[in-house]
Every structure is written in structure tokens, then in C-alpha cells.
Image (cartoon, helix red, strand yellow):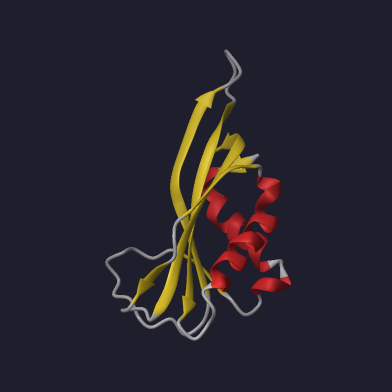
Length: 131
């Protein structure tokens, strides 16, 4: 069961429960209007990209569909770029129970404003959806 209102919180809580993420800042994504500041530590910022639902039990009030959550991963220039891929793989392990049906990973980009390497991972989860 995917609870639409809590999908980002549930996603981040699963990461917080894993010791691997102890030194990594886990947060909700902020609007793009906020000026980038230098990345002091590794960060994962998550948000909802989209939710798609459809009625799956004819005549009943049940819905199923997909929830798409993005995770923007930031690694300071002082870290290895390979940390981005390592973090993505750990996110997959922590959220697999949410029924990942698709994962899209962007290439590594550079943010001079934030002084870091960046990667976006987009996770699509499938199941019953509750609003």
C-alpha cells in the first residue's frame, strides 16, 4: 500500500533506518528558486515527481497505480564521484519493499554554484494507492 500523502516521508524514513546514511543529510527537495549554496556534506533531497492512479476493482473504491519519487544526490567535490552510484544502490536496497518497477538514473553533472557532483535517480513504485 502506497500512502500518497506520506510517500516522500516513508521514502526518507527507510533511508534513515539504514546505518549507511548516518553521515548523509536526508531532506525533502527544496524549490529551484532557492539559491544553491556549497555542499558541505553528501545530501539526498527527495520529492514527488508524479502519481498515477486508476480504479482497479470495478464498482469498488479501490485504486492502484504508480508513485514516482525523485532523489537528487549531491556529493561535494572533495568526495569521489563513484559515491553517487554507491548511494543510489543503497537507496534501492532500502526502498525495494515499496515495489520498485522502474529506476532512471541521470548522468553525473557538476554544479559549480553548489560545488558538488549531482545525480538524479527517479524511482517508480507500483501498488495500491491510498489518499
